[in-house]
Length: 243
Ligand code: 6GU
Image (cartoon, rainbow, N blue to C red; front, side, top):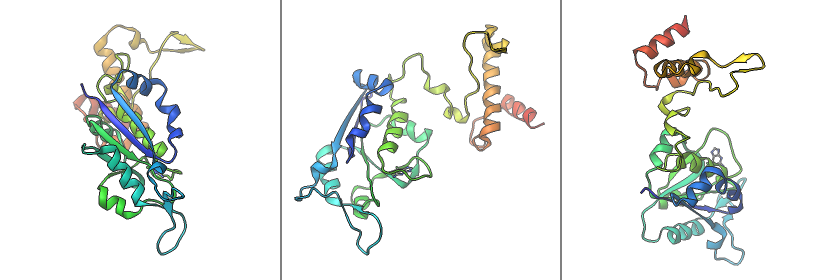
């Protein structure tokens, strides 16, 4: 079985309490598929004031995360074990679905969340972490980014999703957005669910869904079509959309 152990180093462990203890991530931990440990970075700051940040050499705005507490913490967390260290920073590689699937098979990951004006550069030199961002906007710290990444990765740890949920069919998997979905009743407020979905013709349903996914992607995220795997029928659908 592929158990994933995640350690999170942060000044604000309480930020994680809600998201990690509900829904899918809660169930994954209860089933033993995922182990998540929170570590208070301040516990590894040994000076009298337990300082984790300090003013930047050369002057300027913002405080810089000090190296010693981070190195001590990572050493204590990993011991002799191997683990992928991930540094959350707006300067990192932008996280996407492919990265989520690549991280899922790892057995140990350590997330380092920073605040203030960034990390002392020696943290990068010494730990050689993977640096990750979740998008082109600035957050107050790495915590929310770590939660987003953990959630997206956990869905790909075998056994985490139930049979009701299928990771493969979701938006962004296979490079397309999902098309529209319907449930009962057949007609609501004069709007009727498509006949084909109620036809029982599985081949026709699959083709309709594929065409709708192509249409939605073409309308909303045409950039994704350049990377998507398309066959001749898909290209025919797209050609008709362009007419
Ligand atoms: Cl990982 N950190 C911060 N502070 N802001 C971000 C981010 C990370 N990703 C996007 N914005």
